Image (cartoon, rainbow, N blue to C red; front, side, top):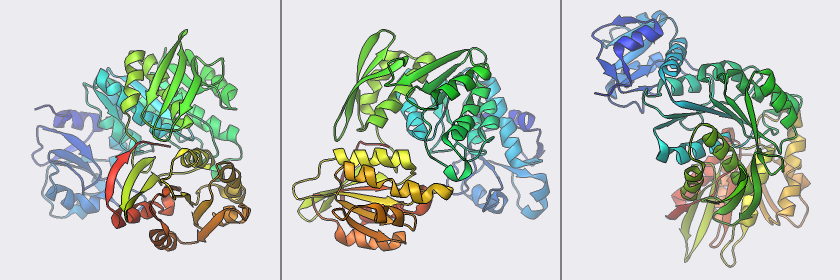
Length: 477
């Protein structure tokens, strides 16, 4: 049996105490009692809303081979009979295990952060590196204080490439995570107005993102977007952190991985990249210039991690978009069809503009409309009114005549749009959902973009439930 961890190694790594007859090993690690697989260990982490110890019995019923629990919580588990490893604190034990996983691995490790595009770039790296070796990458956006150590702890010893997404809401949050991951290559995709409520400027955001360089191993690499106004700040931060090699990507002529030319289409695009004195023509199975920029970051990181550049470039043609990040649904409606572009996972001003550009380039069927369904951008703080109103410019420039808005902050965009734009606004997402179900028609292209916390994904799901699906296709923000 190829164990992810033997029980003896778990005990040693976490400084745990065994209770009951432990299995020889475990096949995986889970913190979700609902989705745990047979033979996996359930780590009873205490979160902001729920305590995993309350779900230990469900985890066992669903196939958990082992429980990792806190000493202080052991009495509350009552008569539960199961193999357990008892630790001082479950999250801290998982962090210790993640650090041991990193120590035992010979994989090339890539870490990605940025205000926009980090999940897309991480998924690109997973896709393009998979033909070249065993890839272990963050699930979804597991990029915070529990997601990063969980991803590390799940990394098999035989991994060839490890790809980690590292996020933050406040300064100081990336530093401990990058020191756990210890990347060979650290990527900063972009700096944009995300989490503005917690920062006073883009330079402050850049400084927080630059913490990723503090974990880079000796002789490692930094990859920075040269088109960013904060490039010089990031370059200095990488040097101050002792990063030996600093590389750049972007349209800037001085970029080492340069966007020489771009040709966009409704379903895909072509990038001409200047790399190492030659130009590569790269077909990308998703539309959008921002996707091409993320592809350059991925090519740079993969190349610096030792992958063959030409094989990496060839893999972009078969990219598939992710749910909530540009996945397209073609739905039957009446005698025609409706296209839904799902961008509901997250939003900030930069990604909103990119999504609006995607909608601009989409082709409605005859008689159809381009409809932007936009929900509130969260964590904008005192800047919220201004950044929401500022979306009027991109909407008008894209020629989008129908805009449906959800949430109180989107009232600022409603008031900023000119009379020639047809605007529907509802404070409550559920009310806009009901409206959308009755207002879409054959030929329309509907793009839904919002911060995840608004619940605008329910609009997408309601449309999918109401109309049968034909196909899913490309396009990601």
